[in-house]
Image 1 (tube, helix red, strand yellow):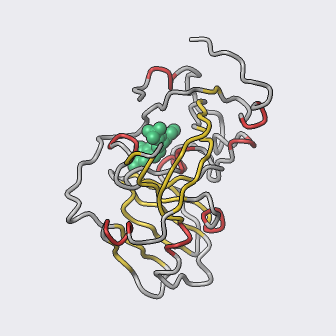
Image 2 (cartoon, rainbow, N blue to C red):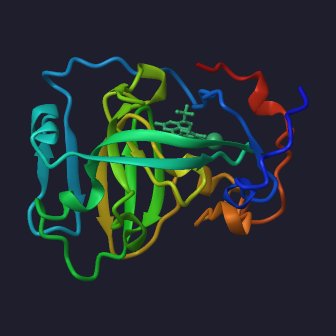
Length: 211
Ligand SMILES: Nc1nc2c(c(=O)[nH]1)N[C@H]1C(S)=C(S)[C@@H](COP(=O)(O)O)O[C@H]1N2
Ligand SMILES: [Mo]
């Protein structure tokens, strides 16, 4: 499918090598989890003074924020103006006393997914643990009940179905970062791979499920 060229007024928002879509592709490894929300937890651990385990009600009782952002997947699709609602990542820092030498974070998600992000990259207004998208609860395939959204990095860093946040003094690679993808993943710098380019067909994402 040939997509129309991007409106020149919006072109600066499209990173190099990306194609704009209005659809919302669904991409993940493994199955979509189902949860009993009475037992669902989000665990904050690692280099913290006290570990905390939050219930879904605990998460919903934290300050709620809305944010609109563009998203950029390494498989070359970008989608503009996505509306999210949830809890800012930095709100969590008030719950655990993070050690001053914690510089990195590992996001743990179902099933067996993880991704690493520098702590500094998670402190902005636009970094959310999102439970809603476009004014509706997230659907199961896009990460309900809770996903991270990190707009300024490729979308694999925005883990769906998050269950744990580990604060770390040393960096460690997550799932895609161990499998040839870039450790930091800035889409505007085209940081797709850690070494040689991996063979991802340019139209692969068009064959995925959408909604
Ligand atoms: N738990 C989990 N989160 C995940 C993934 C995954 O496999 N498991 N895939 C990532 C990748 S590669 C992308 S591009 C986005 C896709 O999010 P979407 O399905 O809402 O478009 O989720 C990310 N989060
Ligand atoms: Mo992805």
